[in-house]
Length: 89
Image (cartoon, rainbow, N blue to C red; front, side):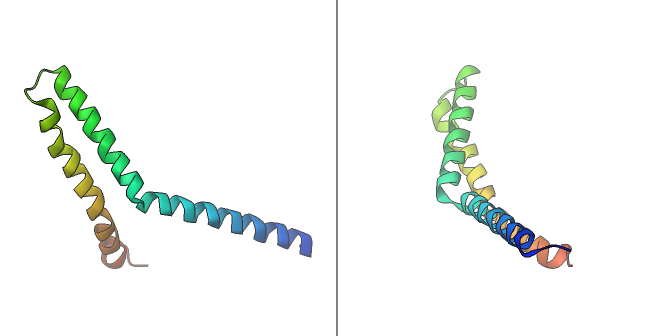
C-alpha cells in the first residue's frame, strides 16, 4: 500500500507535468509563436524563390506566408468542430 510520502511525490509529479502542459499550450496559442512561424515561412519561401530566380521573390513570398498564418488561425475552430461533432466521446 502506498504511504503518504509516495502519494505526495506522485501529486508533485502530476503538478509539475500539469505546469509543463500549461506552458506548452500557452506557447502553442501565443502570438509570438505565430509571428515567428510567419517570419520563418516568409524567409524560407523568399530565399527559395530568389534561388530559382522568380521575379520579385520577396513580394511573392508574402502570399504563402500569410496563407500559412491564416491556416494556423483557423485550426482551433476546426479542432473544436472535430472534437464536438466528429470525435464524440
